[in-house]
Length: 238
Image (cartoon, rainbow, N blue to C red; front, top):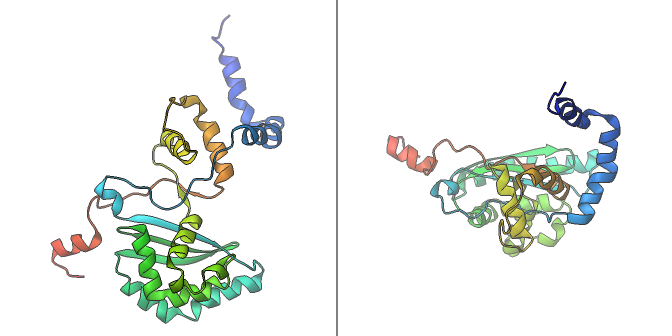
């Protein structure tokens, strides 16, 4: 009786759940892939786009590694924010960009998560102008931050540092990952075309280079319009 390879397909599909296969994948197969065809780390921050809606409700997921990851070091990072809370609230209110932002402490990172409209570099410049002293205090607790102090005198270097520590935003459509990897490696995108079957391997290799990523570009509730434009049309002011 011929089952058209059903038993073989079931066996192959069960391999990821088998201990010996997981062991080989982790310690042999993936390290070999990385050695032979590793992918370059993809940068954080929004990617250029001709779509008007892509300049609204952009995401920034800034992970700043702590210099001291002990409980004392983590407490110092929290205190750097807590001691300047009035300045933070005032500054965030006066940033010349429509945005929402918050700080988090996640394991060995102090994080700033925000959603904003407009240009990435101008957004960071707004922060330096309004709460630059807060970031000065924070940079003293962050690995590599001493090279950026004071921030208002190292604006371009600070912008580059933020982009380097902002999470890579994975494309909404997984197969677009091929083109991003090609461009980062200095090749013409999708030339020659990639085989769709190789996408899982490309994703695994990329997650080796980018351990933390943002999954997708985010959902935009009002494509093409900023919150300020919507409030103005509604006549509710700002």
